[in-house]
Image (cartoon, rainbow, N blue to C red; front, side, top):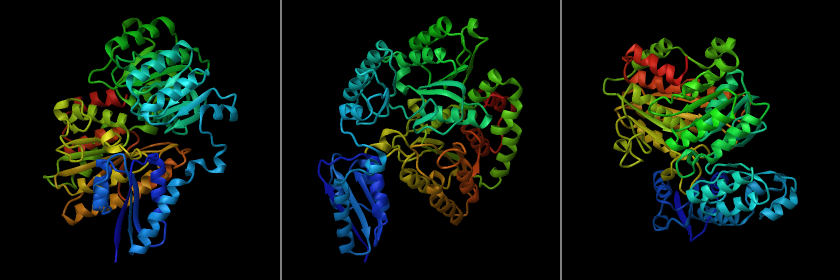
Length: 542
């Protein structure tokens, strides 16, 4: 007889990534049908409930507690599994295995092991990040702050201190950087080259660097400064310092800035630095409702775009003019191709199927999607909308056209980011498939270091189940995807795309193209040609 048991460990904390790995190990034990080890947040309890793994003991746990949940073939197997989980929790984390090198428990011991270090990655709970970062900065070490939820006043203090000492603080919340060809955190394996990137947008940096790689261009340095840097409170401290650093870098021939629209005063500061202190060409990619227009005196060497795909194409125009058409063929589709394919797919739909549900792991890609949808189908609902009028009352329930950022705090509190653990998206996909009004589901698949070892493969069963749910209801469900990655990524772009194509997912070379395609499908191809061309120019760039 199947048994479900929960064990609650009061006021007990472990890193969410460690817990995910532990959960996967427990699932491999004999007689275990399913298992999960999670912090007892409301979101995690809801996930356990949907998985059939929540008991009354787990339901009563507080957010500072940990829930050990198992489903086993019998009670003795469940009890034994819980004992093993407790033992595993008390051991040194898997990431600290001997082959990983010396394990250090303080900045002092780390620097004893590597006295010449000049760069460090900090990943601790946000409220503790400042103490660690300041300790490193005082020792003249540059820092990449991976931690989320760092108080903004701490960010200001860290960055001001670093700037005064000629040091860089990348982040907080910097999911991606590429330093001297080395991928940091969620970065992809891209070729070295002459494009330097300053990004206040993690998956935006990934998308642009991947598209540049596919075109044949490469990255000199890619510096993730964190989304708050261009806000008024921080004042663009690191944006400006990184621009200066790339201007001084001999290997960088073109500088690209990727961000959501900066505060007006911050924009003035950045423009002043570009005008007075730089000579290199720039591409400014601000994902805004209106296109940023650089001052006339900068127009010859500063080009502004709204889309990530467009930024990559503009780089080709500035650096390798003769390669534009070749680049276009590698990563683009013409508007007429998009429309023709969309109309072909739309024929499979019932008239009652009219809505898009976009389930994103990448926040920047999600934001770009909302901007494109606003131009083609109107405002969409979201847990992180362009306008508060379109904020979903419940982020766990979609309404009409909905675009969801599964990396937002309501989905990640106490659990790994969806780029690492696809559980939340798998469950959400099944729920969306049950809605008879849904026509298209759009998903991103982020490759690279730090991401799930098989993002496409992890979703295959759920995608097939979603399609089956629709089929049994007499419907076709169109699933679109974009795989952001390269052939050299650990997951391999070609292999990931093969798995998705095999089960009927329609793939596109960039996020912008996938979003435009989904809009054309639900509109049954009925988008005015001039409007489509305008959107295409703004976000695709040709």
